[in-house]
Image (cartoon, rainbow over all chains, first blue to last red):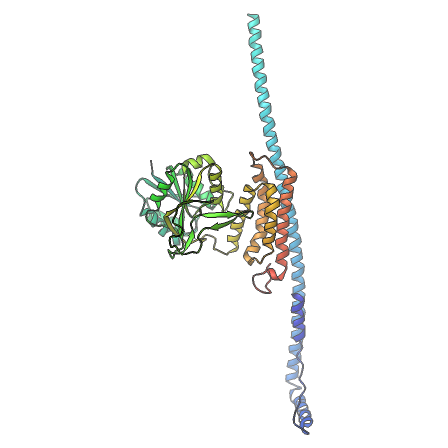
Length: 137
Length: 332
């Protein structure tokens, strides 16, 4: 797309003087020559400098547009690269969070298991204590 | 004991709120409760309610908790056994409350929805809905058709829209409140209806209860914010409902095919952010799968990779000129 735009700008950036022609038989070349000479004299000091100024401006616009489009492409690439990094960070973050949540659940399960074993142990100790007391009685 | 509690969540809805509350007040008595939960409006919604509707119980959240957050605030204070939620841009037609209360008197029913018409009062917006899998695309029955009596039979549906709906308190006790993860809105009611059905309760469409609804006034239909909220909700719903295996096998290829289509510029811009948000949602959603069992870590990695690839696909499409809404327009 950018290449097409630049090609179009380059194709139309230079304004060229058009050669005079005449279709009249015999006198045609003379008419065309006269118009060319007259035009050369009448436009040399006023229209021609304007034409040259316009051409310089057109060339500058084409170059500036080209530079801007290149810069835009470069920025696009940088944004895409940054976005890829951001996605990667998000993935890492999500995966770490999941590991953490898995660990939390595992710890909670083991903690419950430990609490149950402790409770059973306490019950056994209590029972043994009662038995001892019973024996000593 | 009150007959019904009607909760209206408001957010910068001054232009519609008056009509909404007027319609509610014409059909409620002293045994009904009306609650407006304001989600931090910056317009004059709060002043309007305070000055013109002294009967209304106004709760100011002070910030935008989203539609689900606003509803849950209302549910926490509501006294009735029958609970209704009405959008600020909806206007109930006469008899709505009575018919809905009758429908919810049936204990097999968990959630009830009504016939929603566009403000012209003639064009159908919603008469119950269906979800198309695997992409979880919602479809409103009768959408855009003229209301000529074709949708006047009560019927069980996949879901009813949250614009004007109701449920029994016992369903809240059974499945809990709305999921506030659907912030700022969209799909929370779909999620709720699926949870209710999973719990063995019916979700019914009640045609005799009717209301008009402007639709998408909060985020603006077609805006980037609208697409972001809509698809964010859709991805959350998909991640919650589909097993990781089905997500990878069915959802991802279908989603990739859809991304290859010509999306409007705002939708494509939104999708990049949506996949990133979805990626960050995955750990909490999968960790909450107690009954189904926690997915293995490598399965989670495959899911995050798939979401990252979908995001890359958005970028890839965005960089090509034909991806934009206008010919030759740069889409990003």
